Length: 160
Image (cartoon, rainbow, N blue to C red; front, side, top):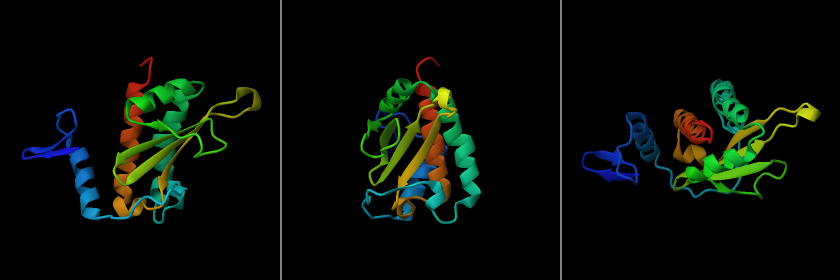
């Protein structure tokens, strides 16, 4: 994101949408200076998020799991198109872990367990945040970030 006199723009020069600008300004207003600690947590582990946990699962994680079930390579391709970097050592039991860096001190880890129909397991996705996330973003901004990541991955997925 780059500032200009007429507002904030993406690196390619296109203006940020209204909600994207609110997100960036919220981040700046939060004033977080802490560096990422390298320890991951889900929304469930962040205080005062109980009202958002079902929304995260139903509107972010489940749609991603449903779209990419049996399509691990497509998820990785879509993630790479948005700056995601495969992070194999970050989630030992997962089939795929991808790290995103949407803001300089705000990493996000997408963890994907693919379906195993013969064993009765559906695909699962979990978004994890560095334990310092609330130094940088409020809960609504964390949800906006998560929903934006979902939208971009779904819109970029091959075959759409």
